[in-house]
Image (cartoon, rainbow, N blue to C red; front, side, top):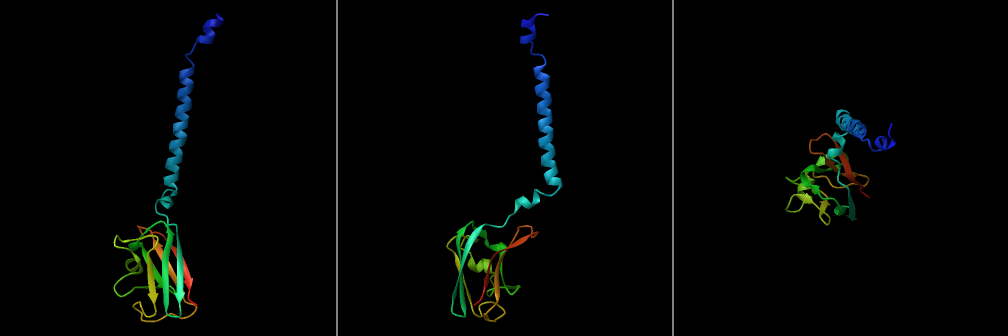
Length: 151
């Protein structure tokens, strides 16, 4: 056997690389399919916005909520609650009252919650929990963006 022929022979390289590539593609495909079959891909689609908020209580009858920084929020996905009950401001939801002209709540936008401002006609009492709740587009999940306890 000629040593020079043995060293320069390249016939076996191509099948080995082909097998390695096929195994890698199969593993990647199995991971992608497994992620969606187990439902892990659904939870990654619609996550709550990351933002900071500031509550300012002036006396016993008025609060101002300001979106100070972070992602903008679609106003139609936001609702406000007082002690768990959804509130509206006249004909507007919290998101509609809070949003700018483009229908989004962005950094710097603020909304006033004044005593007797919502449809129930009741004012604030100390200890009430005010929450801003965001709901995913399909309605499948929601999360509380910010909470405030009235003093």
